[in-house]
Image (tube, helix red, strand yellow):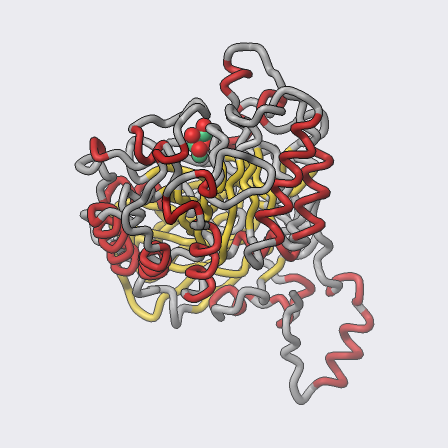
Length: 484
Ligand code: FUL
């Protein structure tokens, strides 16, 4: 995470000079809560698949009641390699599977439940979806993740203290039996809570200890993290302002969660680093139903979601529910490929490549923090301003005048999230003036601004508010097809 040193032949002179002003050139201190190494790895995944699969796939309901006959679960041609192949081709980095939804049915032969694939006649009770999917993910170079619902409508111990140990044992089974798991999804949804009568007091400490014991590098998802947080809605729209910090003290998953508005935008001065993840389905429901075959989201819907999630400092967990065969339906896979093509067309040609950047301020006035690092394509090199600089400007000069409509910018978040307000301007030759073309509040890991096509050779990024000296590590510029 260190900038390379550009000192050349005048090294001794420069060393003497820099020794005399060590204070000015010290690397910027982290600001507030910062991501762990694992959270950085997680953030850089950006886009991955959710696979809702279970008895509900076969019964046309979204929430089963736990009384379903296990034989209901009977995929006729399960092919997890096809899921993985599809996810890979779509540009996704992993797959999270509903190992146990609210109906309590386990897609693996759990020793701690009598309501699993082991009790179904599917493959004579010898099947294990988690085994097949984890192997397929490894084969295709994808990360593997697991959803487990704490709310369980089937388990006889649910509603008693004993259930906490059952759930911990179930976590241990899925986290120790299928190789590395990148994310543990802990759903806060609970039908009892909605009726105002919670039957179970969850032992979150026990759950977290069990999870980290088996997968120390995992990201735990819940309303309040600690690895990553629910973004507050299932529409795919993260806050235009989106801080990766969150106040977590006094809050918990589910009933005890912060208001959804807060989850949507985070807390400017939040205590913990809990970045947003957006879960949204490619179909109207989370589970497959033949009735939604003609309701798969359009490329434009998905492109909009891309901009309101990844373009707003959130990871995107896109649900693509396998069908009753146990395969991803052709409608969904076709749409995923079209979406990938739209992304490639939109972000294939970075018009800022070969540009130069001039900044009003560079930390210590030294090449170590030069704005050139914003354009070098290397994540861990960055431009930084002096500590007392909280507003400043960066001027980007393209090799030639270009037409563009998307601006992508990244803060170097290993040192914290800082910028709270900025404006993008383009130089207008005719009026000899800077014209504002877009504005934003937070940036964070990644921010993409969309605006009408503009032609210019020079752009100016005006940082209007930063909580500590701004640090940027990447800027890109694109001309996306207007149709998306
Ligand atoms: C919700 C659940 O109730 C839905 O069924 C779905 O699993 C979604 C991802 O989370 O809380």
